[in-house]
Image (cartoon, rainbow, N blue to C red; front, side):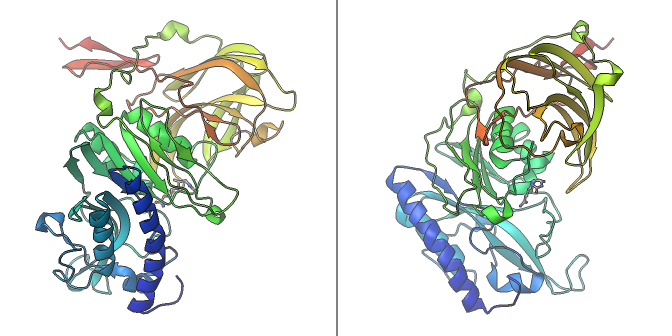
Length: 443
Ligand SMILES: NC(=O)CCCC[C@@H]1SC[C@@H]2NC(=O)N[C@@H]21
């Protein structure tokens, strides 16, 4: 929205979007769903300045005020969007999760108060099946270009309990950081995470369905990911991701049709016996077959400097290292297409483009062409068939997200396993070795 509109025009636009969401809510409820998640930017849209977002904002109170906007719309001032969402939930007896904008007025003489006298927050709200506001989360990790919004002073951890498990919530870019994403699982034991997103796909590692399904598997929780569908901005790919079940997902770059996904889920995936990772104990003697200097080269992948080695043979076993990370691959190709080149790569360092975070990655990729310089660039199709492969690494974190992406952007549910060697969190000194942390008891 580049030019300012009136409050009435803003509401008209948001009502058009909510008409579409309401149809989805009715369909989902009609099929017995207990909860529906709608995408980030799905109501107010995008490309705003602080001035143009203003008519789209409402004051969203703290959920502890115990408020059903559908029954008492004027209690906290003008709130037509909150009222309509609450009525959708109440009239259809379903939890509704949506992304809207929160405005909090402040005194410009206060430290931190913006010059226009208000904080604007990118906000996720949840209404229960009676239409009551039960959760409000202000996005902490804003993505590039979200100039219309403020970062909240404090990182919020938002959870709520339901008859079908404990829920947590965060928005889009938050997923790449410990707070609040991993903290909700590790420190607050949620079963299911609600995830409104407007995710631009980025191959080879950051396509929505690929990374979001890996996050659910790595964290051992359900992730209900609702992505905006807008092919012009490379946004597509939603899923009901679970660590222990074949999941429905949607990816469509061909046209602008959105899609409603419905699935029954295990509401307590963390208790599920099928998830517990198998303990896998490799040791330093397995660092073998390190390729010689001439078979090692460097390449850029999303601006990170990877160390690669080519997989030339039909079958092989290699180890390659960068900084503290060593990766190992054992693979067998059923047949290799002569015009395709595959490499095994490792990266251990600080990623600094579009956000800063440390990464450790072991990856096997098809290069875009037969030119070494193309390894790490985006590739959507592949014809070579691998009958099996296994990749391991001595990661110095327990947050390991296993991604497998097949040709034409398909996931590989139930076709691979994540094996993690845990180490006991007792008074121990831990020494990183191959694919594990071995610990010795402190004297
Ligand atoms: N709307 C958001 O907050 C998140 C957008 C995430 C985009 C992911 S993270 C960095 C990568 N760059 C992209 O273009 N897509 C990826």
